[in-house]
Length: 308
Figure 1: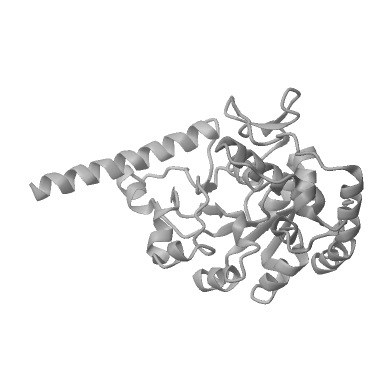
Figure 2 (figure 1 turned 30 degrees about the horizontal axis):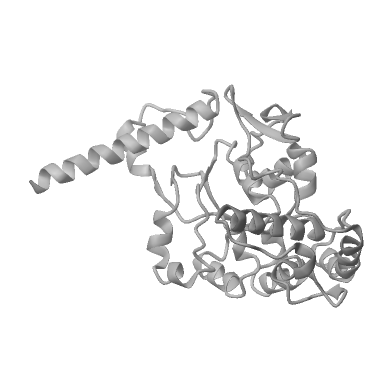
């Protein structure tokens, strides 16, 4: 009985490995890659032995509502990249972290040697405990931080929470009531605190060297994805495999969709959702509030962005 169970598990793992390879070949249109080049000594058995779940070599740490899902899906176009499909929240949720690295590894995709495993959880960026925990996991891990206009990010953050509350038929305060207190910006509003990029980045730079954190322009990624993806490829030491032909503009949705091996994929319906209303006066106050924090962030990353 025991041998029968073990044999069934072995066959299941072998089938999973073969399915992963087939999916990868379909995604790349059957094009050859150094990782998949065959030799006389290679066999399905050696491929099975090499395929395993590995801890991530790169993590998209944030920011929330900054374009992390778009960045993950676009990186997944690369034949040398495999991504964790769901946000793991390992380093910022105590219940998950207590399960240990062995559990974390089981949340990763199966990969071959030379492939990069990428995980994304935007909640890591603002979590005070996350930087040291990520360092303990792997001091050499590459970190990707995608940012967008912090005022727009805040409104998008609120819009998502509002949508979730309305879906559950629960009331929620208008954005202006949460954002303003006696006519002034309320610094205690959590969505506003998440947009203070310089405070969170300072904690990461206290642990990781600056060259291990790559900043992606989320607004530029939406306008024209390819240049930002090429920079990310270089940061991850990946050969250039993503091309402008992997993207096409969907006029109905109003943003770029992905194209690979003849198959297209657009991000889910939550992307591009209309923002909740905010008066022009309140938005101007928000922009003024972010001027100094934005300047500090620009100095930290050594570049500026066209934000309000």
